[in-house]
Structures are given as C-alpha cells and as structure tokens.
Length: 193
Image 1 (tube, rainbow, N blue to C red):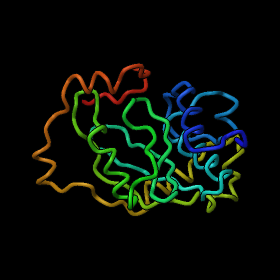
Image 2 (cartoon, rainbow, N blue to C red):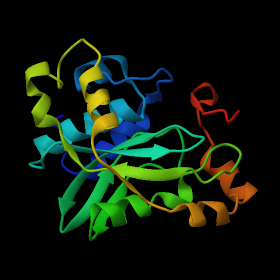
Image 3 (cartoon, one colour):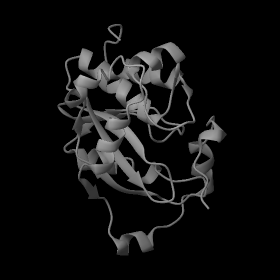
Image 4 (spheres, rainbow, N blue to C red):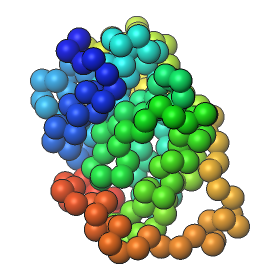
C-alpha cells in the first residue's frame, strides 16, 4: 500500500481487481493476495490505503431497496471524496469536492440502480472509523470481518429520499443501464425478484 501516492492511484488499483461475487469482507492483506474484491472488501482496502496517506480509515454504508448495498471509503481533503470498488461503472470514486458526507452520497443517487433501471439508493450511514476494530487486526487478518459488517447494519443511517419522492422516481434510461453494467461480472449482479 505504501506505493500509493493519491486516492486516484488507490482507485486505479481497485479497478484492476477482479470482482469477487461472494459477500462479507476480507482484510486488505487477503485482497492483495487474491487480487479480488467486492465493494465491501474494496472499501476496507481503500480505507487502509487512505490511512497510509494520512487520512483516518473511514467507511460509509449505502443501503438500497431491490438492490445490493454499497460500501465506500471516504476522506476529506478540502471537501469530501470517496474511493470504491464496484461491479458497475457508476459507483466508484468521487473527487473531494463535496461539502458534506450527505452531498457526497447524493452524487451516487442517479447512478445507483439495479439491472432493471430501478433507482435503489435509500439511506447512508454515518462514517465508521475502522480503527475501532484494531483489536481484530482488520488490516491483516485471515478471518472474515463480520464484526465490521454487523456494525454497519446497526450504525445510524440517514434517509436520502422520502416516500413521496420514491413513488415519483422514474426508471433509468436503457442506454445508461447498459453503460453502467458494461464489463460487470454478471454473477455478482443483484437480480430483482
């Protein structure tokens, strides 16, 4: 990780990894060894890598309806930015130009949809500092990081839209859906019932 000089380089590394289709999170050490990551692994990896650049290791959970949740590593450098692994082209990094975590999360809204074009982002968590899990050796453990996953499910989440807004949502245009899932690992995509 010490080879990274910027969040952009961390994002390039995450983009080079194959997408891991099973759930849960593994440590950055396991990601390096296997050269695979899902969004949870990618966020934990990015948080550790951002820590080597002097940022606190923060992650944010974004909850979805009729879709997979998404986890991002966030950092503040003038404004809030993010680094993320995704199986889609629309849910990756964001430049640090956002005034708040909410504003950063809202930048994902229009690109957060399932394969049917259903806009699915519904809430986001407060940032979770992974240093609170140092006793688990989260950077290097061979074990799954289930305690972090449990924490993300229980930490406070903030809604991004209300019921009236949800009822008024339009489906995403088919060209945008096609572009979003270009080069995706089809086995790892959420399939609405």
